[in-house]
Image 1 (cartoon, rainbow, N blue to C red):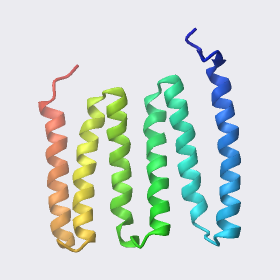
Image 2: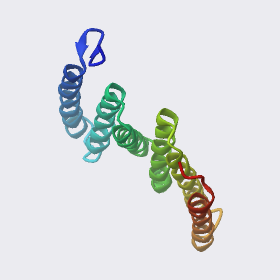
Image 3: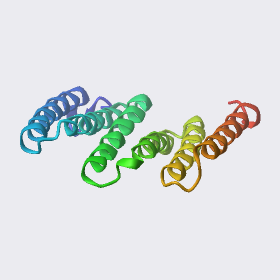
Image 4: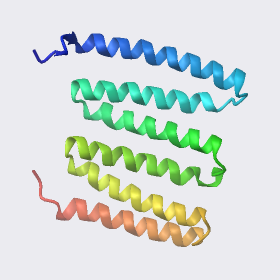
Length: 165
């Protein structure tokens, strides 16, 4: 039967995942505010756990939109947790861009959508320019020019040189 995994209906697995994730979110929120005294950490934990739930949904029902959004929330949650515990507060912009890159790339790996690969390349290039600016290797205007030209080239390549399926 295609609607079951190990004899259990997929909707029941998703419902159990939902309740477990919400219990973990409530626990994580209380712990981050009361014990750690960090008023921002709950949001990144929420993103991480909600992304995990969406990834479970994507794996059960083969939904590419849930896969993309789940990976995006998961990686945003990870980058926010790293941002809170490591001294990398200057690099949060590039970390968020790389979260979008990883979400697009992982969606490409699971669903073989070439558009996601092009978006991943664009985001990787933009994230690399942002990181070079954040570590002060290049000035803002040069990073903007390099990133803009790179993104424009990838868009033109996709629009004019990709075979239509």
